[in-house]
Amino acid sequence: MNNREESTDEALRNRCAELEQQITQLQIEQREVMEVDRIEALSRMAAWVSHEIKIPLSEIFMAVDFLTRFKMQAPENSQVMVEQIRKASAKVDNVVKKMLEFCSPKELTLAATNIGRLVESVLEKVEPELVSSGISIEKALGPVNSPVLVDEKRMAQALTSICLRSIWSMEVNGTLGIRTYQ
Image 1 (cartoon, rainbow, N blue to C red):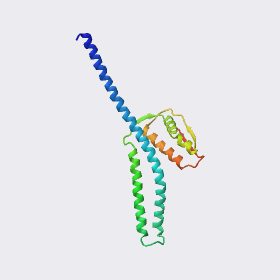
Image 2: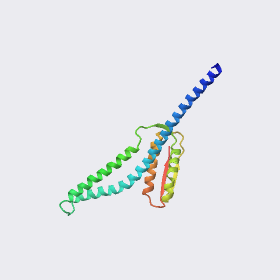
Image 3: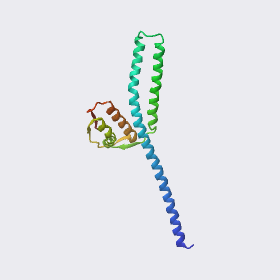
Image 4: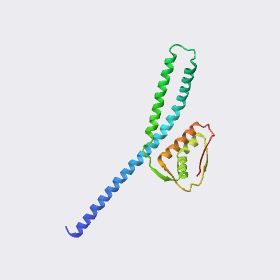
């Protein structure tokens, strides 16, 4: 092999190594995006499950407390049944809490974030739910001169959850109000 062929061969090997590094980096980034999507989907599901279970569960807890306090005229085994209801309700409550914990990332990744833009992106995500529920949005996003240090993904999840829970608890033709200020 002559010098020219060797240098071309060397350049080709270097370029192949660069491409392999870029492919590896793209694969890492793809997995990260997929993980974020998974967490967002789980968070939406957890918010829905939480909403659907927590309201009836709180009614059960109130009924059990009422029965316990006032010891209504009931059969002898009523206290045993009340305790069974309390234990079963506590188990369901614990499952919901664990599911919500599972959906939350553990480490914070703090970054300077424009809250106005973050709120806008969350509102875009929940817009289909707003439209299908007949809910209007009233927003007052104040000027954000300096960014806020937050974990953008977790903040987006929290705002999405708050918005969805608010929408689900409203009647048709309700208004969701959101504002930011400095």
